[in-house]
Amino acid sequence: MITLLCTGDLHIGRRPTRLASPESAGHCSCAAMWDAIVETAIRRKVDAVVLTGDVVDRENRFFEAIGPLERGLTSLGAANIDTFAVSGNHDFDVLPGLVDALNEPTFHLLGRDGQWETAELRRQGEPVAKFLGWSFPEEHVLADPLDLLGEIDPSGLPTVALIHGDLDVPQSRYAPLSSRRLRAVPVAAWLLGHIHAPRLIDDNAGPTILYPGSPQAMDPGETGTHGPWLMEIEPGARPRFKQLPLSRVCYDALDIDLTGVNEKSAFRTRYFDTLRTRLNHLTANAPSLEFVVWRVRLTGRTGCHGQLNEFLGEIDAEFELTRGQTTGIVERNTVDSRLAIDLNELARATDPPGTLAKVLLELDAPSVDDPSQALLQDAIEAIERARQSNAYAQVTEDSPPTRDEARRLLVQQGMFLLDALMTRKEHQ
Image (cartoon, rainbow, N blue to C red; front, side, top):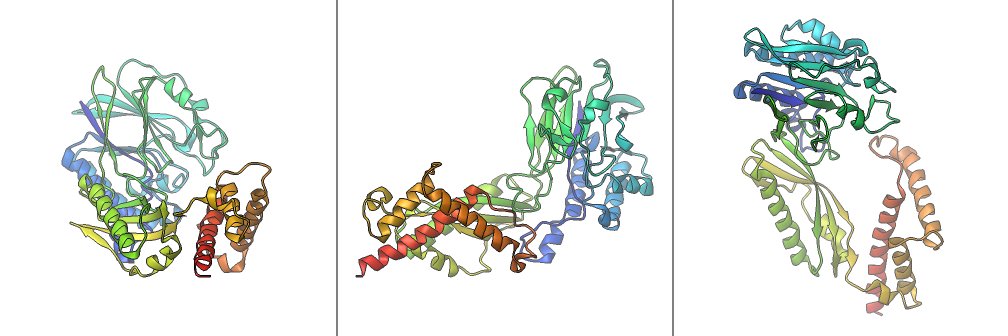
């Protein structure tokens, strides 16, 4: 049996965002993850390590990456573990330079200059597997690299193919790949880079396709389990894959249903009990996990909808939960709940609360002709004007609002206004 440790999109030079301190981010850096991968490969005595591109974040990280990379490759070489890699759009020019500078004989960069290339994995001098790879020759590649691939001999050694690219996104600027064409190539498996979310496609229709994903989660967009993958190859059988959850950080999107919650004490109980339960679940099978960073969305129908921002404001900004070595923090709370009232019943009235309830119902189930569409378009334009203003010039993570995002914001603020109107009505 041949055992490989596979990963991609290491992005050595980057650190996770939204952690409490620079020290925490440094401890959980992508360079630290590379050290953990090397240690795991040596401890498990794998036959080879496979890297599917974007090993280094970008060119100005050359000097930050060369130390950890050299240290890891030297350790792998001393343990007689070869490393096979391709370059991606982030490191198309810097990774070849690193390889040349390090001159480590057990590191094999395949497919330089956008030309397909093969290399053999040997045990005791005898070839036991073959690697086929293609590397980015420049930052943007508009054509499918398979256009350049010649005939592959299906006999002989099991072949593992490596490439960095965008699967089934024909207009991508980052090597658009076709799953149909990949499955027609007679190899044991395709190992892909570029997409940071892990994805395994194995339905017995041709070779298995794996995006290992980024082994270290780096920002709130990278939710779920992250870590390298073990790949086992035996003659006459499909490869087997198993993810190792080595990421020290987990970014988690968590919904908390407040249905039936009508007072502050009940809110606190529901909020913190849900976080504790989730933390216990996440840490149960992830021994390497040190930080959980939550984006919480409050949902459901609650009698204290209008007080939720006040309740959230009373939570200590430095609040955290712990379980063993793992610390959980809330990075963002979003109120997306509803009042515990019947909007359809309320909308029958012609007073201000009834009129607003009708608008909210239209926003929740929009049709082309209803008046809420003009309101929605006005909201989109107002949000975009604010986004383009000087006050937001340094907010690099913002993107233009979608119709769904604008609709959600309108409904959210409308529910707060409705709550205020109903409260005023009750006291008149």
